[in-house]
Image (cartoon, rainbow, N blue to C red):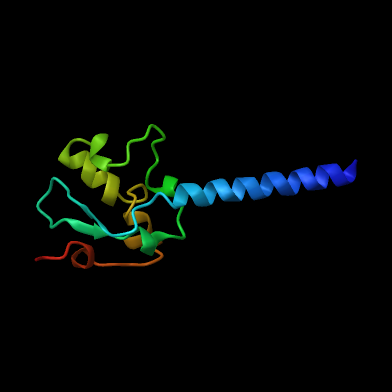
Length: 112
């Protein structure tokens, strides 16, 4: 009986890991341009640079909406979604005291 449980556990784990890889593989291969509603230049975002993150770290909605502007419709809502201290999806890693990979605004908002 123990053998059956061990084999079933291994099979479920393998299947679960396969599902996670399948979902991550759906991310765009090339960079995407994130256009805001503010005065700053658009940001070129590379999913490949963020491969260690889970999709839900940024795409926190599970209703199939992947563009931030589908839900964060106003200029202030969108700016907060990216930049607001401790909750903004970009700010958690790139701004503030606890930032893992600090960056300056101009590194993402590149003037053309």
